[in-house]
Length: 296
Image 1 (cartoon, rainbow, N blue to C red):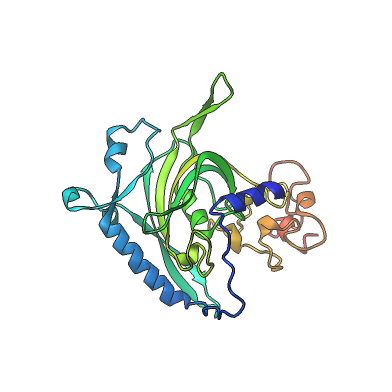
Image 2: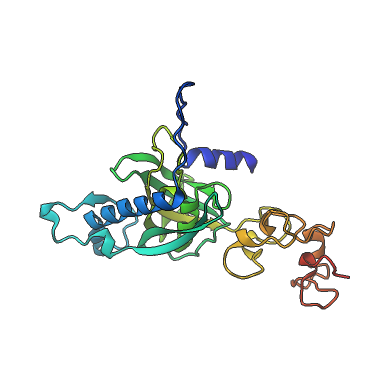
């Protein structure tokens, strides 16, 4: 699994970091709030002046060979609907270096709705994608599906968008190849703080807002800490974000912690000892044993 995650991290948006001259003075890291505002202005301008091939999807909804294409609205395209009038927004809060909570926006649209399930932010997903800069440069793409671990193997913006889509299904051909259909497709637009921010990469300049078109083929619920509880279910507060659940406050989210309450007994051994399919609560205090340091 470690080898697979390494491949995923390298493949998704993998680029070589440019080296600096020894005598060069690095640019101070920009203020997150100011840069986020700058990025948002650039994204809004892009969305107001570009469109996607929505007519192709509307005219042939059963055709899964259609890919999302983005283009500038020229004078001859004055009948086109701008992306700005089609996208939805999602607000993500980022903590800056001074521990300030900074709101950022993801703009996104779903071009085709899949028939399968929505992933969570901690699932593994089988996707194809294409990444763009705002000037249209394609910096990375994957035409054949590959697995991505949303919890640890992708940038924040990618992880936050994927749960919007639904997966599809597939058939196996006589030659062993696969045909995917009924899958979700979408495109999202993110500020640099949800991408690579100050990192200066060979094909992605620092502080670059990014665009991704994505097709979601399959979803695989993960168990990152191998404790017998799916990572998506290690969300005691029920807010849909397993990243902020850390019962024993050891700075490891429960879904990455094999002993969630730090009582010396692995979660796997105290979750469901009687085998009835429900978490045990030996002292009847309303707290499952695997989250309760004083369960006896």
